[in-house]
Amino acid sequence: MAEKVLLVKFGEVAMRGDNQYIFINRLILAIRRNLEAVGNYYVVREPGRLIVEDRGGEMDYDTVIPRVEPIFGLVGLCPGLKLEEMSMETLKKDALAHMQEMYGDTPMTFKVNARRSNKGFEARSQEICADLGEYILDNMSNMTVNVKTPDVVLYVEVRNRIYLYSKVIKTYGGLPYGSSGKGVSLLSGGIDSPVATWMMAKRGVEVEGVYFHSPPYTSEWAKQKVIDLGKRIADFTGSFKLYVVPFTDLQLYLLENVPHDKLTIHLKRAMMRAAEQIAVKDGAWSLITGESVGQVASQTMQGIYAINAVCNMPVLRPLAGMDKQEIINIGTKIGTYDISIRPYEDCCTIFVAKHPQIKPRLHVIERIEKKLTDLDKYIDEAVEKAEIIEL
Ligand code: ATP
Ligand code: MG
Image (cartoon, rainbow, N blue to C red; front, side, top):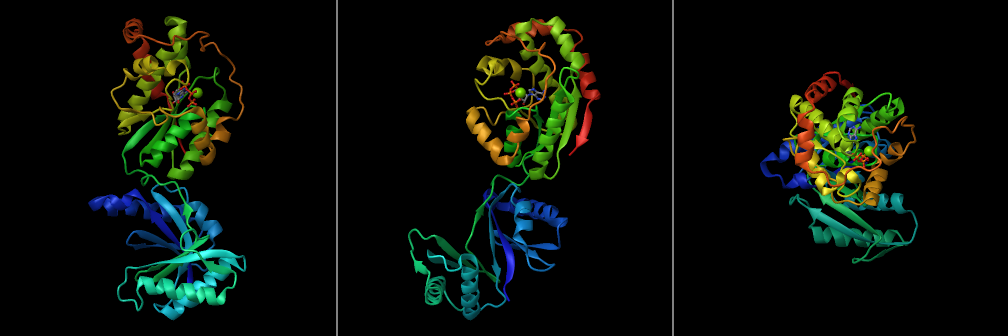
C-alpha cells in the first residue's frame, strides 16, 4: 500500500551553496515544531525536497497542511503518495488509484511529468510518462491528454523511493525564519506596521515588536489589539516578543516643550531612539517601520529624513513604495487586517496636530531638541519600565 505523505518544496534556500544545510535544518525544525502537538510526524530529507510522513497512521491533510503552510522559506506543498515498491507495475496501479481518488469521473485533461533521479529504476522518464499516460487513458474514460494546457499534471518523482502528486499548494516563499539576523519592529495597532513586520519576517529576519503605549490617552483596547497582532505574527514565526513601552510621561513632556506642528516628528524620533536602545540590548541589527512614502504628513521625504537622522541602525521600511490598497491586500491575506481595523476608542486627540508640519527641517528639529534637557531621561525611563510579553 502506498503511503500518504506531504511533499514540501522550498525556494531560494536551494541556491545557498554551503549554507544550504543550515537553512534546510531550520525548515525541518519549523515543520517539526508546528506538527509536534498534533501527532507523530517525521520529516525526511531528499535532494531539493522535504517529505513529511505520518508515523501514527494515515495522514490527515486538513491537520497537517494549515500547520506547515505558514512556514517561511517553503514555496509549495504537495499532498501525494510514497510508493511501497520500486516497480513500474506498482507505479501504474498507484497512479491510477491516485487519479481516481482525486478526480473521480469528472471529465478533464491531464499529462504526466516524470523525473527520474534514481538511475537504477527500470524505466526512463520518457517511458514513465508514456506508459502511465496510456494506462490512465485506458482505465479512466473521463481523462484525455493535453500536453500544453492540461487541467491536471500528474508528477512522478523517482528518487530512493517513488513519489507522486498532482496538486501543488503555493505557499509564501521567503527565507527560513531567523536566518537573516534580528530586527526590532515598531508595531502600532494600525494597518501598516504588522504588514511590515510580517514582510521582514518572511525575509528571514527574526522580529521583535515595540509598542509605545500612552495610557490613558491610548486605551487598553489599543494595547490588546497590538497583542493580538503579535499573536497573529507568531502564527508564522513560532513566537513573538513584544515590548510595551510606557510613553505617556514622555509624550506630555514633548507636548509642553515643542511646537505643536512638530510634535509628531519629535515623538517619532523619540520612538526610534527607544526602539534602538531595545534593539542594541537584544542584539538586533535593524529597526522596522510601517512607513510608506507620502502616506501621511510625517511620511513625506523630509519627515522620514528628520526621523531617520536620529538613529544609527538601518531602518527597514518594506512598505516604502507600496500603495495603501496593496498593503491592505497583504494584511487581508495574512490575517492582520481584520485585527487592525477593529474599532476602539482612543480617548483623546491632544497629541494630534491639526496642521502638522509637512516639510520639517532637521536643523530646526535638532535645535529644539537640544533644549529638551530631560528628553534622554524620559526615553531611558520608558525603556526601563517596558513590559515584556512573550507571545
Ligand atoms: P500604522 O498603520 O503602522 O499605524 P500609520 O500609517 O498610522 O502606520 P504613522 O502613525 O505615521 O503611520 O506611523 C508610522 C510608523 O511608526 C508605524 O508604521 C509604526 O512602525 C511606527 N509607530 C507609530 N505609532 C507607533 C506606536 N504607538 N508604537 C509603535 N510604533 C509606532
Ligand atoms: Mg498608526
